[in-house]
Image (tube, rainbow, N blue to C red; front, top):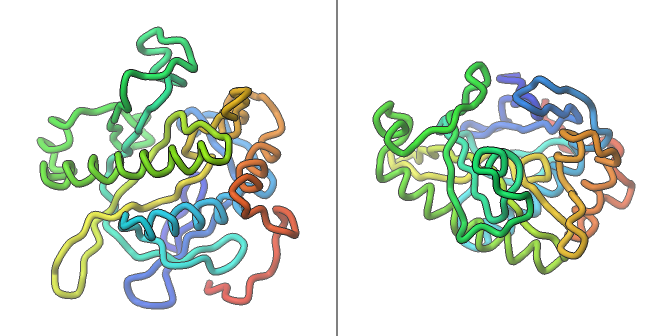
Length: 250
C-alpha cells in the first residue's frame, strides 16, 4: 500500500510506472467532517469511472486509466499529481450558490472554471491562477493545457449525460504529469469521474443522483448511484456486491 485516501486506497502496480486504485465504500463530506458508508459505492464508482475514462480516451483526452482489474480495482499509470482541484460549473449549486446568493438550479451564463488547492488541513481553499503559478504548483503552460482539457471533458460529458436524461451540474477534475521514458512530460486526466465528484441531476425532475444525497441526508444514496450506472448501461448484473476478481494484484 502506498496511500489511503477518503475514497480510495493506492497500491503499487504489477509493472513499473503503474499503480492500482482500490475503490472503497467509505463516504465523506464537508472536508471529512461527515463520514459514512455507502454499500456498493466502490463497485459502482469503479465501473462508472472506467466507462467514462475509456470514452474520454477514445475522444483523444489523455488519462491515466489503463484497465479495470476486478470489481473494486483498476490499473492506472503512475503520475505526479498536480495539487489543484479543477471545478467546472454549468448550473449553480453548492458553494457557488452560497457565495453569490444564486438560487440552486440557475443556469450559469457560461461554464465557470474554479481552482482549489488540494489540502485537507486547509479545507481545500479556493485559489487563483496567480496563486498556482506564483507558488509553483503548475506553470502557465500547464494551466492552459489543464483548462483546455477541462472544457473538452465538460463539453463531451455534458452531451453524454444529457443523452441519458441527466444534467451535468458541476464536477471536479484532477490532473497529473505523466513522464515518458524519453523524458517528455504530458498532462493527463487522473483520479476518477463518478457521482462522488460530479453533481448529476435528472433532466426532467432535477432529482439528485450524486453524493449530495449523502451530504444532505436525503437517503437512497445507493439507489442514486445505481441509477446513473443503469442509465449508462453498465450496472453490474450481479448488483453492487463484491465478486472475487481473477486479476487481483495486491
